[in-house]
Image 1 (tube, rainbow, N blue to C red):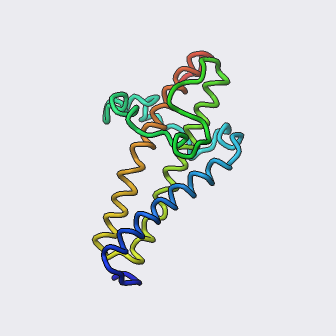
Image 2 (spheres, rainbow, N blue to C red; image 1 turned 45 degrees about the horizontal axis):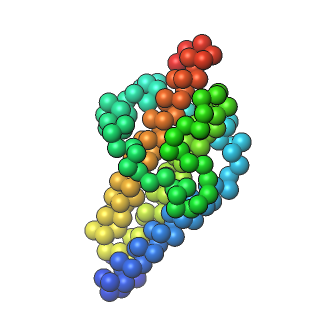
Length: 164
């Protein structure tokens, strides 16, 4: 049972405004994190061996076929680092691109966090729908970032002769 009972039209308006606020606030906040943070090898961004340098995401979800359809947040926010295409083939360019995939991934993980708040003013079914929306909207972006980072890791490891 929601904490606040409102007419359905107001619930929908509040849901739209709240999601817009959360997405923009979290995106703007993540853009303020220095790039140096993402250039480091933090455990929570590491690729797992089962991801096979992103190959698993292509095999399971055919990422190459649809990733171009996703909107890059830099278009909306008019700031940030576009991940539409590689900026260059030098190792530094690839490392920066990989760092920005970490920023985008973090943004989308954090964008799911507010979903339980929607139970405060939504009936239970709509609250669960908000959880579903958060997951279904953000997971494709997370998959693409992990796919791209895996491909970059494969390229840079071949350059240095490191084993995967």
